[in-house]
Image (cartoon, rainbow, N blue to C red; front, side):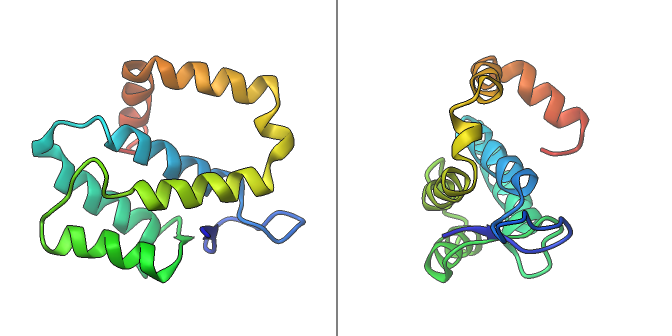
Length: 130
């Protein structure tokens, strides 16, 4: 299961902080819709930012998940499914940590915003998040 480990204080329960999990999950969801010629560089950026040993906003996933992603990057066999296991682990961690958030109006608003992906992509791009 993914958990956060660097640069953001942990929640009172000791679980992963929301910003890292959510940011990584959103970037992975956007990654899935990128054109094929952009997948490799985006995968490397996500790895470097969230999963690599020196990641700025590290989320720790199972060793098998990290290995699968790194193998795809190193062999240049990156596809929209490269981060599927990572995404599932992140979602499970968010679900375990934030059940009230998932049932909230704020979560529904976030999901509605995700539906307007072009706008969100533009915002994330301007913030240098993708």
